[in-house]
Amino acid sequence: MLRTATLLSALLLTGCLPQLTQPEIEVDGHATIFAEPDTFTISARIRIQKDKREAALAATAEAVAAVKAAVPELEGLASFKMNSPEASVYPVRDAACMREAYDTSACPIVGQGASVTLEISGSPASLAG
View 1 (spheres, rainbow, N blue to C red):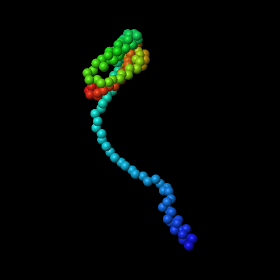
View 2: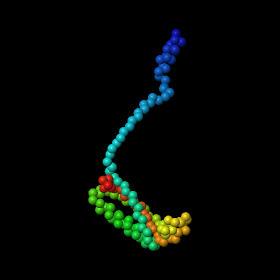
View 3: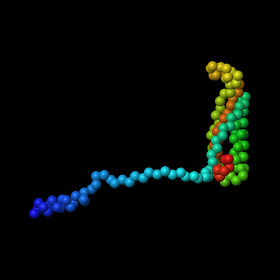
View 4: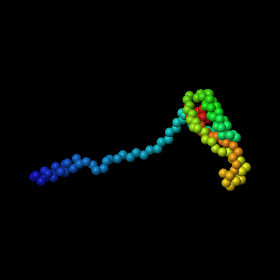
């Protein structure tokens, strides 16, 4: 009798054992969302070449200042942020030599150039075209 009671108890308690694997639900789907953008980002590079390094940097600074002054004047512009890192300076070499030379580093330097990349972000996005 004790043996039968033990066997029945073991059979009844088998359902109480923890499951070895967790149950899983797998969902797969596909969607397409259409939304109007609310902000814009424009990147522009200003490059200026002059005879002297200082003149190229000064002209680049003037151009950046002109852009910074003009952007807030855009009609309908709600907000904007402008990122303008420091200008980089590079030598300007003779154009004819650059087209024909195998080693362009041997071409004579005829001036200095300065460039800066501006990044302008703002809203509404419709102002960016």
